[in-house]
Amino acid sequence: MGLFDGKKGLILGVANDYSIAWAIARYVMSEGAECGFSHLPDRPDDERQRNRRRVAQLTDKEPQAKFLLPLDVTRDEYMAAIAEKSREEFGKLDFVLHSMAFASLNDLKNDTIATSREGFKTAMEISAYSLLHVAHAVQDCMSDSGSILAMTYFGGEKVVPGYNVMGICKAALDAAVKYAAFDLGPRGIRVNAISAGPLRTLAGRGAGVEEMLLFYERVAPLGRNITHEEVGRAGGFLLSPHSAGITGEILHVDAGYNIMGTPGRLLEDLKQNANS
Ligand SMILES: NC(=O)c1ccc[n+]([C@@H]2O[C@H](COP(=O)([O-])OP(=O)(O)OC[C@H]3O[C@@H](n4cnc5c(N)ncnc54)[C@H](O)[C@@H]3O)[C@@H](O)[C@H]2O)c1
Image (cartoon, rainbow, N blue to C red; front, side, top):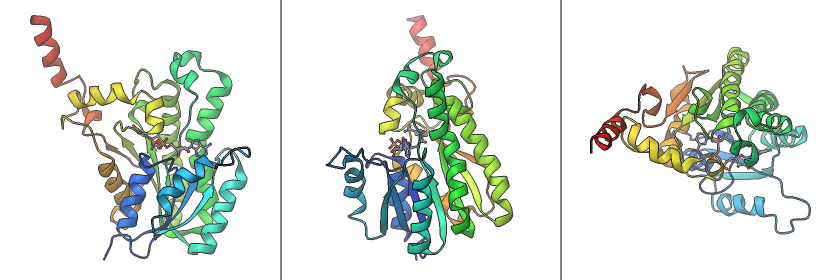
């Protein structure tokens, strides 16, 4: 018996096999879940359909993957089509993973106070508002004990230089998780987020993940970075009935980094360097 036998859900936000969404998808499918997937729409002039192909290369090999549809969260019609397809294919959805974010590299490189107006609006729309948009679109086809999960980062709680405008988006996303949890609570639908430590992914690269990996390894209580598999299993937990009493929660999967009030063991190294 798998934890997700008979369960059906949506995985939104796979770009390639490094994506956090793929790590969570692999885990839930290995436990029996059937999933529908999204990919970023391809430009009409891209005959090779690169975005679709990159995700299809993964999902085509998985018998548990039931459909793959385009999704741009800035346009309502895509989520409406995905909700409609979910109803046709699955009847009810037991879980939905929201694992999407975007900010322009220009804005990420600049000081936060230099963020462009348009860049701010786009980053907030794709990275924070989209959770409300997705929750609203799927609510009618979710089962009464369904679970929605978003992906967030510590840069929304404290200042992480380089994370800049995305930190503001994550603060908004964290609040959106809680307000959506309140709205959907009477239906028994839960909304949570995982705050993951740095992982090498497409989005991670844009947000300065390499520096963070070095720092986390030295500062986090566990003295190491997290793995994709660890986020996969924690995501599975929050999407499963095992977390039935939990909603509006931000669960840190970061080797304990967020509990630190000083750079911890890294301070010892700094002291030694100062004395040598
Ligand atoms: N990688 C990390 O270190 C890390 C840490 C904590 C949280 N996160 C969060 O995890 C989530 C997934 O990111 P990832 O690291 O797996 O990178 P990723 O690049 O694999 O995933 C980001 C996804 O967002 C999608 N996306 C961007 N704009 C979109 C739009 N307009 N419409 C629909 N989808 C769109 C992309 O297609 C991509 O699939 C993001 O919310 C990210 O902020 C990442």
